[in-house]
Length: 126
Length: 99
Image 1 (cartoon, helix red, strand yellow):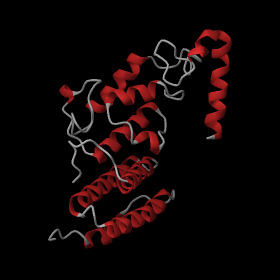
Image 2 (cartoon, each protein chain N blue to C red; image 1 turned 90 degrees about the horizontal axis):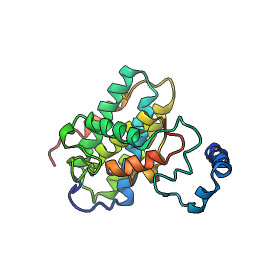
Image 3 (cartoon, rainbow over the protein chains, first blue to last red; image 1 turned 60 degrees about the horizontal axis):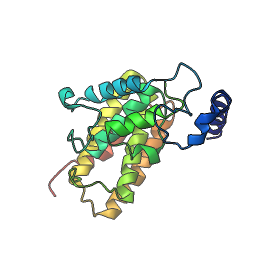
Image 4 (tube, rainbow over the protein chains, first blue to last red; image 1 turned 180 degrees about the horizontal axis):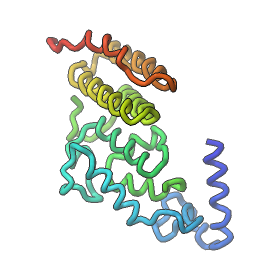
């Protein structure tokens, strides 16, 4: 937690100096064009990259018919998965993007879109 | 079985089960590829079987399974444990799906 806080603090500084206007929008869910939390380097993932990789993780899930997977699918309602499958998908996403999603967030991620949003806004995703 | 079509509101107990499952999968990730595969399939089978067979309102029994699972997870987290084969014995006691 301390590390995370330190990293976040660190990440924010250059953004504020580079582009002060961005901080006005402040909020965690700023529109994609104002990626204040993630513009710390060009190594960060683009939204389409995140989308592609999230979808390919979901498509490669054994119980999923790849042709039915779109960014809008809800894992349980649309893909017929159960809550345990949902956990497995989130774990697979953690591995793909080399991050650890805390329980509280992990239970909320029940659709491809939510996964994409979460990962895209995660400063450590790679 | 959880009703997957109904709007999902997880009970505290369901959250605990899912969190335990997540814990097992994370712990499995730290093992060798072969052990990991074995652990994952064993854990998945066990959770799914209990999800089907255990009455969701049998809180005492679910609590018991949660406690047992947490203990097993703690053991699995230790670096020299490479599998759950020892726990298989107790798993198999409940294997008879007659009720």
